[in-house]
Length: 217
Image 1 (cartoon, rainbow, N blue to C red):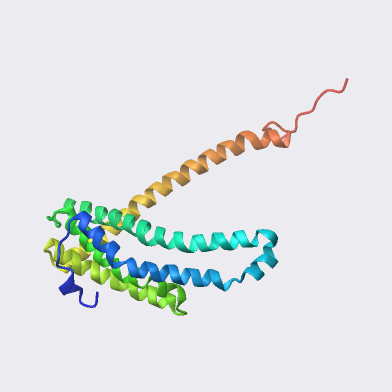
Image 2: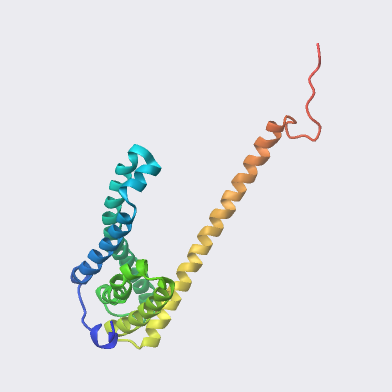
């Protein structure tokens, strides 16, 4: 990752790219689990028991399970899924623009390479006081690696890779904005209709400004 121009030229099939990802992230995953277990161990059993009573031990046990399961889900499920989705979007937009002419495996390989900085330093993001600064640095470096790798894999200039990435981000946010806007309008209209139909009856005036009066026998 220090020299992405040199080390992101190897093209891998989809299965090989994921296999390489899992091999490279094995040690970072173990480190992340170790850090999570240390954090859980920081809460002594006596303290947990004093706060939660007899269920304290069970809660602590669940904490240890979560310290193992959650890092695995993050590193080996969430990130791989995000890699596939991101690569798919870049490839669809890039192909539509006529800029990415290689197969999907090349685009996915580029995205896999770009995820290495954050994956490798995931445990450091938890323990370091300056985690926000490190996250910003890793995010910027991910973009550099992505542009370099996409350029190497698809045999295009890095400016073309940058254009594909930017247009993809714009298109995705535009579509999400439209979806959320339509959803908000639909929810707002439904809510207003329910309020106008129900509230007057709850207030006892049946929707009129003058409350209903009933004859006294």
